[in-house]
Structure formats: structure tokens, C-alpha cells
Amino acid sequence: KAGVTQTPRYLIKTRGQQVTLSCSPISGHRSVSWYQQTPGQGLQFLFEYFSETQRNKGNFPGRFSGRQFSNSRSEMNVSTLELGDSALYLCASSLVPGSNEQFFGPGTRLTVL
Amino acid sequence: GESVGLHLPTLSVQEGDNSIINCAYSNSASDYFIWYKQESGKGPQFIIDIRSNMDKRQGQRVTVLLNKTVKHLSLQIAATQPGDSAVYFCAEKSGAQKLVFGQGTRLTINP
Image 1 (cartoon, chains in turn yellow, green):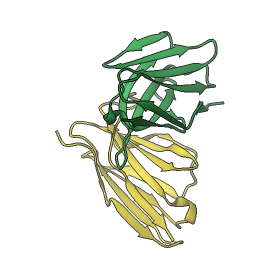
Image 2 (cartoon, one colour):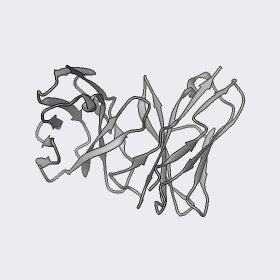
Image 3 (tube, helix red, strand yellow):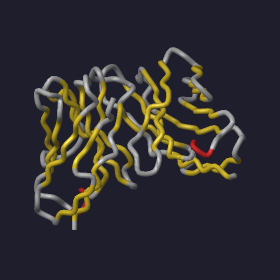
């Protein structure tokens, strides 16, 4: 069974631009969560989607948004990029929402210049 | 408040020795405590979890101990192997809410 895939793997943007990251969960998994990982803040929860609905949201500004499609694939968008948005963005899927065992993708490394 | 912290940022052990990675937490209302492992260039990988009403749980070469009195969690890895080199995160969860991760401990295995 294929794992969680994330595209693109690497991305370079400039301040003020916007970016869209994509995540394909493991087949059959309907819950998708997004995390931001930085050396200073560690792994921080962004949001969780299940059945195309956002179930949980972390403490990030409204510039960070996401959505989930009927096939469980998910996208997250960051608008008006700031230097501090440079991070590894990780997507994780699970069979059910709120699962302890989440399956993470390799992440998208976003660099904001 | 909710915060999960780690006692040591780095840990070096000899191959074949046992490793103990520690974690402190502050949220007494957490239902589960979970350990994840992140190898270089990869996303975190689930290792083991423990429910808050337990004090010990064993997996394959790993044991998690939970001491609710002092709000302390540990992960013991038996007979550490080179493949165990990674950053280990503890996380906590209340109900069906989000996972709250600690900062991580880097485990280095010396040959």
C-alpha cells in the first residue's frame, strides 16, 4: 500500500506570494492533518480534515487555510507569505479522526526569501 | 496549559546498550501519550502509545513508562541498533483532539 505522498517536496517563494501544498493520504484513510515543523517551534498542529470538513484547527493566523476533497486528498494554502513561514510542512493521514497513530508523509520544504 | 517538554535535546548511546528517552508533560487531562520517531528526511513514524490509566506498555524492543505523579513519560529502547538513530518525539492527546508534540530528542548510536 502506498504511503502518504506530498507535492511538491521543495518550494522556494518570496515574501508576499501565496503557496498551495498537496497531500494524498493512504488509500482508505479519510482523515488528514497538517503540521508545521521548524527548529524553533517543533511540530505544530495546523488543522485536521475529515469527510471534507475541518474538525480541528491550531493556533495559526487566517493566512493558513486548507481543504479536503471528496477523494480525501487535501491541500493547504498559505497566503501573503512571511519569512517565518519557512518550514517543513507535514501531512498525516489516519483511518479515523483523532487517531493516535498517524501516518506522515515526507513533507514539503518551503523556503520563503 | 498544554505543553509537552523533553529533558534532553540529545542522547548518545553505544550500539547494543539500552536507551532511555524522557519527556515531561503538564496537561493532567491528557488521555493518551504517544511516541514518534523521525529519521532524517522522513516524516514522523508512530512507535507506541499508552493510555493515561496505564503505567507501562511494551512493544517490540520498546517500553513506555508513565508516571502520573510526577507527570513524566519515558521511552526505553532495548539493545539499541544503528537504525534507531533518529529524533524521538513524545506527544499527548486529550479525547479526539489534536496531538501536541514535544520538542524532540536526537538519539545517536555510537558503533
